[in-house]
Image 1 (tube, rainbow, N blue to C red):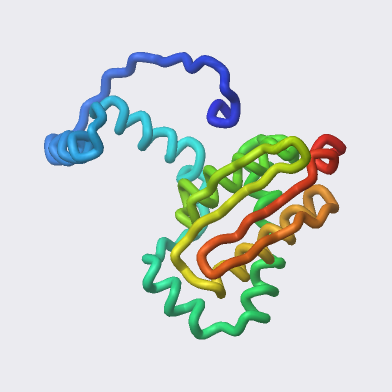
Image 2 (cartoon, rainbow, N blue to C red):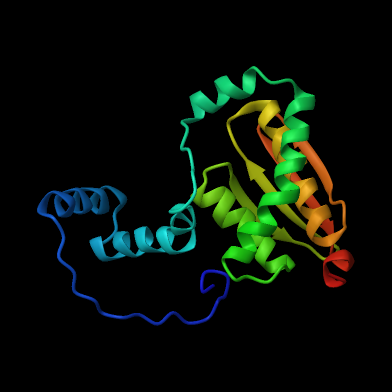
Length: 187
């Protein structure tokens, strides 16, 4: 997948017809973001190619933050932890394989930051590499219960894919995943 690699991008020129109403919205949105319509279209197509097309034949539900907070508020921490672990064991592996990606550390970092973070809106992520460890820092506004779910999801994912248990630092609005460099090099 080209978004994972830092290789030089190649482009293709394509002429398409767009409904005038859609074009008006695209112009307004591009102006609001301070980018060209072409750049906005590229972002929209990237999101479709890397994420949305995989849900065309499946059910996906989009919820606002406030609706998700309401739902999560009725669940206890133990239930969220179990749901997170079960989802983390099952779904990431399937989502990587359906994209034709290898089950490796680079793909997992991409999946966390791009799919779960950027496209699904679960959090905003930062990735840091140090001399002895790598950290994935996830920020959200959904409270401690969501942090609990995220920790369990990621624990399940790393255990299922690599048979490892990262260290976690969990706060009300963030989860930090820490992995030793040597562990990553041995994957």
